Amino acid sequence: VSSLGKEELTDVIYEKSEEGIAKITINRPDKRNAFRPRTIQELSWCFSDARDDPRVGVIVLTGAGELAFCSGGDQSVRGKGGYVGEDGIARLNVLDLQVQIRRLPKPVVAQVAGYAVGGGHILHMVCDLTIAADNAIFGQTGPKVGSFDAGYGSTHMARLVGQKKAREMWFLARLYDAREALDMGLVNTVVPLDQLETETLVWCREMLRNSPTALRVLKAALNAAEDGQAGIQELGGNATMLFYQSEEGNEGRQAYMEKRAPDFTKFKRLP
Ligand code: 2NE
Image (tube, rainbow, N blue to C red):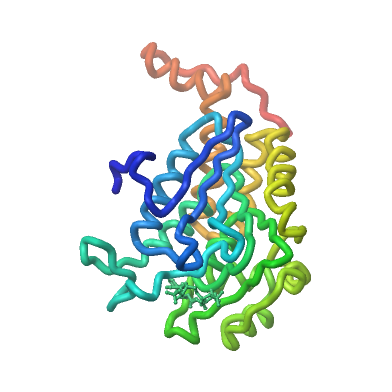
């Protein structure tokens, strides 16, 4: 699927607007938008395209219909060791998708109507913001169906809602309505279902008006505080990107190309 093109998407709808919003919709409504390996491969392709497209400033992840954002892994294709695709290989490739969303240097907004449960709940948690409809229902079902996510699904949740609540969510596997999710800090806002799309656009447009570099570095900084060495690498990459745009950075490159000693004396050492 690495050579996948937009025309080959079956499980996902991918749209880009003139104003710079990419919208990625999980399109398996008959299964409450449960994902199979192909769904994740397609999502990954879309996120990669949205990352690389300089016209895209914000990405929205959502689910088709009003009944579900995503109900997690498709249990009908779950095999030994993961979810099994057409190639017969068992995969847990949603874990790679979580990392991709986390590392993507543009804001990713989850637009949630209906169920966001299991692996679908984790997908909304790793998005930067969540706009929920008043019919949204959140929770982990893993312990009921013989599954768990001991990565971001647990540790990032604890950072969002606190240790006690995270243990409650995982150990009891209860479901929570949108108001409870808002009170817990799981989502940013709750709006009537018929205003979900409009409200998401309002939040996206507000971010699009702000400095893309500021948002990019802030996302990396907020990640770095939690992601250890990988987080520092992400934040550090932004420093290199900015340094490469500076006169001082270019003096080094220029001197090397001209086979002369670099002259860094003209650059101020700021306090
Ligand atoms: C989502 C929920 C609560 C919705 O309930 P309801 O009553 O609104 O719908 P219903 O009738 O349960 O579902 C409609 C159709 O969608 C299928 C159902 O089997 C049903 O199919 P039909 O009977 O019409 O043929 N469906 C829904 N979710 C599915 C799923 N995840 N896999 C396959 N088919 C699914 C209710 O449907 C529900 O509780 N779903 C299961 C949620 C779940 O346990 N997800 C997996 C968690 S584990 C996970 O995602 C995971 C992980 O923990 C670690 C790594 C990777 C993944």
